[in-house]
Amino acid sequence: MISCPHLPKLGLAATRPLPPVPPRPPRARRLPPWLLGLLALAALPAGAQHLNTGKLDSLLTSLATHDKLMGSLALSRDGQVVYSRAFGPQQLRPAGSAPAATRYQVGSVTKMFTAVMIFQLIEEGKLTLATPLATFFPHLPNAQAITVDQLLSHRSGLYSFTSDSAWVSGHLSAQTPAQLLQLIGQGRPDFAPGTRAAYNNSGYVLLGYIIERLTKQSYAQALRRRVVARAGLVHTYDGGTEKPHPQAARGYHVGPTGWESTAAASLRIAGGAGALVSTPTDLTRFLEALFAGRLVSAASLRQMQTIRDGYGRGLFARPFETRQGYGHTGGIDDFVALTTYFPAEHLAVALCTNGQNYSPHEALAGALRIYFDQPYRLPTFAGSGGVPAPADLDRYAGTYASAQIPGLKITMTRRGTTLISEATGQGAVTLDSQGAGLFTFEQGNNSIRIEFDPVKPSFLLQQGGGSYLFSKL
Image 1 (cartoon, rainbow, N blue to C red):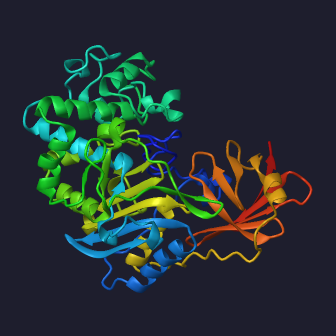
Image 2 (cartoon, rainbow, N blue to C red; image 1 turned 45 degrees about the vertical axis):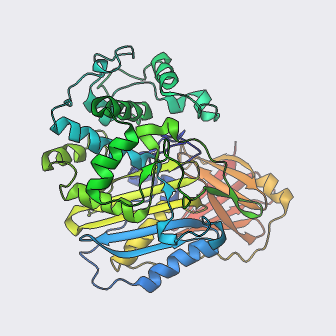
Image 3 (cartoon, rainbow, N blue to C red; image 1 turned 90 degrees about the horizontal axis):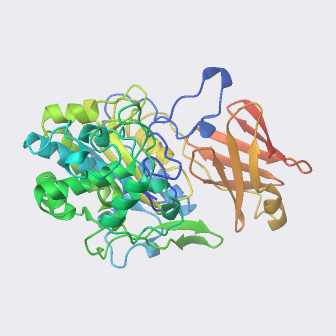
C-alpha cells in the first residue's frame, strides 16, 4: 500500500496512516522512544566539514550484512552529491545494474511532484487554490464545497479508496480511472470539507487527473516536461503507465530463509498519489530544484511549506529537533522512501529502500548524525542465543498490552525462525534472540531488552532505565 510515513503493502496511504513527524510522548508517562513511533531526528550542528565516510559505510554495511535493510542513500549539499551508496545483497539487484542507478518505487513521495505541478498550473492562471472540485468532477460528494487547496492539504474529507476492503485485500490493482472515480464517489465522506485534516490518497489521485485535464497530457508526459526536464532528473518516471526500467528494483521481505521477493503490483491505480519510480540522487536533485525556485515561485513554495494540523500542501515538516526540514515519505509494497531538505543547511537527503527489517527512519537518523559529526553508536545485531525453538516462538506470538502505557499494544508474530514485533501504529521490526526467552533490539543509541516469562503469558520490556510489564490479551 502507499503509505506516507511507513509501510504495509501496496498503497497510497498505509492501512494505518501515520503522521510524517511522530508526536512526542507525554512526559509523565516516560514512554520508551521505540514505542512512541519513529524517533525525531537528533539535533544537528552547523555543517560537516569532513564527512566520516568510513563510519557511514560501516552503518550501511552492518544493516546489509545482518539482513536489516537494503536500498540506497544519497546526501547532497549546495547541489553537490557528498555521499551516495547502494547497499544490500548484490545478487538481489537488477541484472547488470549499476548500484547508484537502481530505481525504486517511492510511494507517496510522488505527492510532492503532483503538488509542484498543481502550483505551476496555478501560477499559469489555469486554476486557483479556491477552484472547486466540481469544476472537474461534479458528481463526487461535496464537490462544490471541496477546493483544490483542501485536496492538497488533506482537508477534503473525501472517502480515501485505500481504506476500502477491496484495496486492502489487494483486489483493486486493475481498476481503471473511471472505476476508481466511481469507488471514491460511492464512499461515504469522512468529514465535512475543511473541518479537519486526515491523510487522503483519493485527493492526490484526483489532483493527478486534474493535471491531465488542464495540460491535455498524460500524467507521465506532464511530469517529464514540467519536473523531470526542469530539475535535470535522470532516473525518475511514472511507474504506473511507463514500461518498467530494466534497472528497477524489486521489493523484498524477510522470510524463514532470508530475503524473499514480494509479488509486484500495478502502480497504475496509484497515479498522482504514489506511482513514481526514482533514485535517491534524483530525489535530492528534485528537492534542490524546488527550494532553489526552479520549479515554482517563492510564494508557491511558502504555501507548500505552510503546515496546518500537521499537513502542508504536498510537503510535511521533517525536523531534526532544532533543524527545520521539509519533505515527504512514502511506502508502497515493500519499498520505503524518505526525503528531507534542510533550507538553512542547503542539505538534501534521500533514502530509498526495497527491503526493511529495521526502521528506515532510524537508519536515516544515524546517517545524519554521522554526517553532522554527532555522537552516534553504530547498531549491533549479532545475537548470541542461537535459533529459538519453534514451540517457544509460537508461545510468544500474540498481542500484548501494559497498564503502565494505556492505549499501546505490541503484537508478536512468528516468521519462520524469527520473532517479529509491531507496536501500535508502527512498522514491524525483527528482534534479535539472545537465548532463553531473551530478545533485544537496537535503534541508534537506544537498546531495548525484552524477556518473556517462562510460565506466564507476559514479557518485561526494559529501555532507558525503565521497565514495563506487558501481558498477553
